Image (cartoon, rainbow, N blue to C red; front, side, top):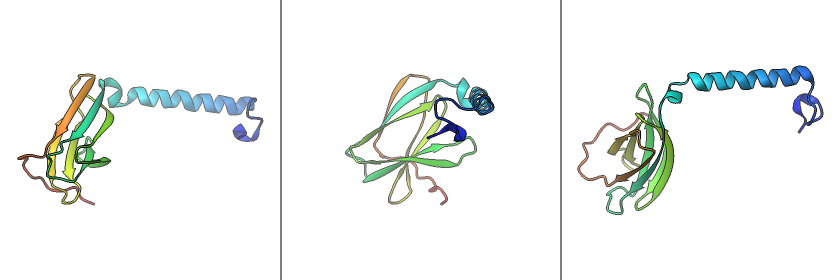
Length: 128
């Protein structure tokens, strides 16, 4: 596909300057992000075969407390997720919305979280 209507390998000089300016602005915004100052970590979320929930929904809890859905993990399943130290993850029974676990990422580079769902205090399900 042609870049800005020109030949794909030789964009117009003004167009190239615009693309470079956008790229620099994007890098500056990423550097200013609060997450850029946190340690990036890799988590593996595992749902135990003994968990009472057939499927567990994995939510990231944002700075303002809103839960953002990321994954559905079936019993005895697992999923890998990149995150940052200090980020909170909430695990809910997909069928009932009942909270079965929560986790706050530490600064360790590799983390494994086992969700068993045993004896966790119920919390209100996320608002639709």
